[in-house]
Figure 1 (cartoon, rainbow, N blue to C red):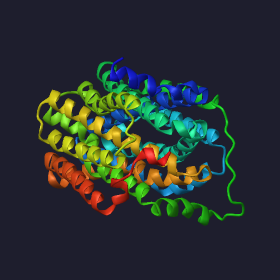
Figure 2 (cartoon, rainbow, N blue to C red):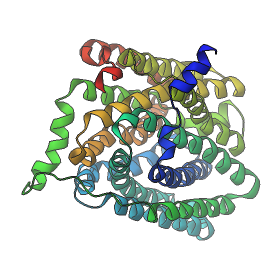
Figure 3 (cartoon, rainbow, N blue to C red):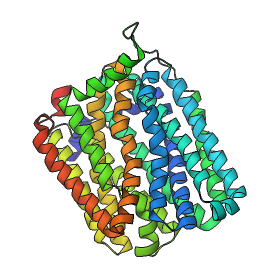
Length: 420
């Protein structure tokens, strides 16, 4: 038997799929993520088509990040005191309502956009930011409860895989439907897929909340998650590394500009560019399902984030569509190594009764960095120019890796194998 086949049978890559609660949860998350990714491409192209301003694309991210940041810690507290399945179902419903509103506005407000600007679009996106602030800690805590501890690495791998499959197909579908059938058809599809996710979330199994300290004040409760994260060098280092990597290295917000002005493609090409990082992440996730990054995990995390930064640097210098597509796919492969290692660390270190609050702190580091990274990219593009701003961001990501290697030696030496 070959070494590959031996490893195949020794490592049950599909173990977590035998858990029915996981299958139902992950199915709902797939359809919701698919719809959200479609919506992201549609709104991004719509805003740029109306404004022709890269900074306006950054404001999309800011309009979602600000409400997200305002309520994130409170949302983690709520996830530790209220049924997590109920939170997931309600916040997913808010996403559906926002999708319906965007569809309605696409029919009725085009004249307003032309004369008065796109502020109404930003307001709807702000509501999705509020929903995401409550959804993230609830779903993170819920998944950790329905999966046994020995399958945390396996569940993190498949959770990332399914998310990235949706993130591959969602943008591609959004761009293609927008390009060939128009904005109304594209938003109708967003409504349908987001609504379909509710079927899984509302019928998922409820899990009892773990016992926690009684009589604990809300301020004490909110600060407990912060103290827990900042008191752990490995956890803090991993979150900070990923946050700054995404904050400075994200070129996704500017893809409509690259697609239009440098690569000379339309919304169809933009859809494929948006899908490329997730496509690469899916490929890497399938590899990691059989070869999980359990040894020398800290070093692999740092090499992965550094490789991501270098991909962004070369992407900024590319003027060829296919080369840019390949670099974005490679960046997704590197990024997914980071996602899986970080997700496993978070699950392994966090007590059940604190999962919501710690996940909310994680969301402040990671979840908001995507939207703040979009704002940073738009602002930097306005100040420095399109290509220099992306070069700067990729270079900063590499510098952050070097700094983290020096300031967090425990993370650099971390082994997931030793955490079991």
